Length: 330
Image (tube, rainbow, N blue to C red):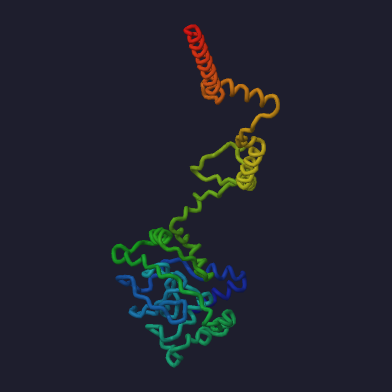
């Protein structure tokens, strides 16, 4: 079976581009490889690798880039769910980070692994021959400090075990609803597309088919539920901003203009003494009023003088009468 897969890969190399190789690199799920785990397995990350391995599973079982990978009976298999169904992966398109996993992380290493360094990857070039090596040149040359971050584990699958383990169609639906990761490897991307798998939308984001782009007219966002104004009443955003900035200035200028136009209230001028003819008349009126009211100085004095003249006259009369009477008596 391994030889047939190698031949198939070589034929594809001769008749089509690299995209054609990828498209047939991983088959359709449906292969049973004898793995039937009762529960979701426990994974541990391979140090400095974007790959997980299952130390408690009695198989060469890995997780990388959103998929599970198993090396069994000299073949690679892949699945989107931890218990299959599995699809055969051609040796020429196995992701390089899977090939780079050191020998020590294979729980059931095949016999031809013996003698190889445990801290180095298997010698795939020796095992699969020169043709494979020519197609995968540089597969083990990489910067370990620049390795990508591992994909998140699809732990939502823990709740699906035993009789609850879903079929293929249900797997696609459940994964599309729960797993948001987008694969990086071209083989995994092809598998996702072939299976109709799509990453779940982020929380709070509207589905793409329902998302409506914002329409801008006159600088206003046409949002659902927003109060819309007639186009002739809406001003562009820049113009409205300029108007808002000019309003305080206009109000200040208007207040200054009103202050200039409106006459300021003048303080009452102090009373001044009248001059000329008018002053004489005013003084005379004051004197007349004082005489009438008995408040003027002349009125009191004149009256006393008059009374004095009367008394004087009376006194003269009395003296004259008395003098005449005396003369008669004599």
